[in-house]
Amino acid sequence: MLDRINALLDADVTDVFIGASSGVWLQRPAGVSRASFTLNEREVRELAVSLVDLGGRHLDDATPCVDVKLAGGVRVHAVLAPISVHGTEISIRLPSRTVRTLDDWVMNSSVSAQVHEQLEAAVIARQTILVSGATGAGKTSLLSCLMSGVTREERIVTIEDVAELQIEHPRCVGLEVRQANTDGRGEISIAADLVRHSLRMRPERLVVGECRGAEVVDMLRAFTTGHSGGGTTIHANSLADVGVRLDSLAALSGMHSGALARLAAAAIDLVVHIDFTSGLRRLRLGRLVDSGGVLNVVEVDSVER
Image 1 (cartoon, one colour):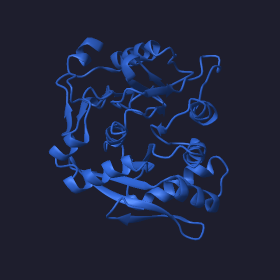
Image 2 (cartoon, helix red, strand yellow):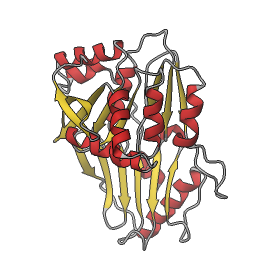
Image 3 (cartoon, one colour):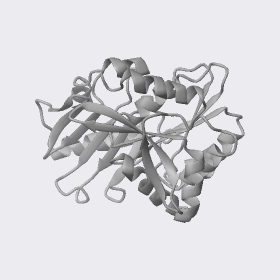
């Protein structure tokens, strides 16, 4: 079964979705397409169990929802019935096999020459950048391109749940979280561990692949303690939603809105939001503003601050 799936994969495939009732679907930048074959429930379940086992974890009726990382940065999420109402479902995220540059974004009409120059200027000026957008918008790809423009003399330390950043830089050091084992031990997290350890590695630029939890507070504090010029990504549907999203994540650590507004406005110099609709990307630039204890985003035309 795995051989049949592998035979479908080309350099453009970013995600694979597999279900007995829903079929086999491939996600590419241009859209989704359905495979010519289907798998029955037994085959899908066996495939899910095998993939999760490759990631060092166990999938069964007692543990019906599992998220694992495989070799090469492949991420697998599997859900068994009856949690998944229509049968076993597998979602596979594939790492990009193509290293893109800002020049590529311009050539693909995703970024205008003017915005290209502004983003390069922001990196050179050591502005801390937050890239926002929906799932699959290209946030990680854009952040990789931006950090690849850091001068060769500077040291970059990256922190990720799963290593996906592709930063072309000779002094880039990557840290990755570790999931707990089957006994619930050995977990290395972003919030409690990696941000703290990264600061002891003397980075000129700190890059957090994605903020999705309470670690946002540790990261923002790090950005305001002599580690400007790095960046991170965050899921948000629009530029205006970025402040609300940060506020909701910070609340997980117990930080109230007023403190978060002051911290985020001081830590983040530039917000770059990716609008991704019908295969087309448009970038919008913004600033985080502390409006009397409420974190808002103001759209701007220039990276100057």
